[in-house]
Amino acid sequence: MSCIFCMIKNGDIPSKKAYEDDNILAFYDVNPQAPVHILVIPKEHIESVDCITPENSAIVAKIFEKIPAIAKEAGITNGYRVISNCGPDACQSVKHLHFHILGGAQLADKMA
Ligand code: 5GP
Ligand code: ZN
Image 1 (cartoon, rainbow, N blue to C red):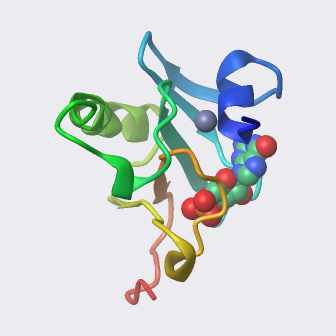
Image 2 (cartoon, rainbow, N blue to C red; image 1 turned 30 degrees about the horizontal axis):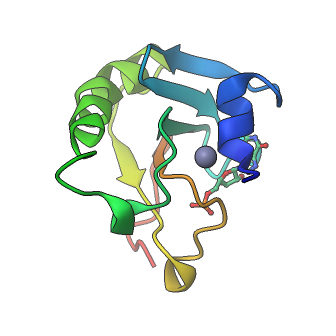
């Protein structure tokens, strides 16, 4: 299986890291859509929100526990948006669960 985010997690593709621990990696999006655009992933390969189960959902809680500190550390002071695109209609392009943190400026009031 070739997965870009697993390759980033393994260090096979370089990334600008924002946070890392044993279970979670956060890195800056290569094509930012806001002044601060960070992706937070579980190190475990989970394909999307559709694949969250009772067996693997603890990592999602851990990610959300860390998101406020990741955003603050990145300099976001006035709010941010957390998005996870799931499946074709949402334009998910990388099939490894990830949460976008977008901030650093006033964002559009519409999400889609
Ligand atoms: P999606 O469209 O699946 O919700 O989001 C995937 C995100 O991954 C996109 O915002 C895209 O810019 C980002 N991305 C794709 N490949 C790379 C990469 O190699 N490095 C980094 N840092 N971001 C990537
Ligand atoms: Zn993966």
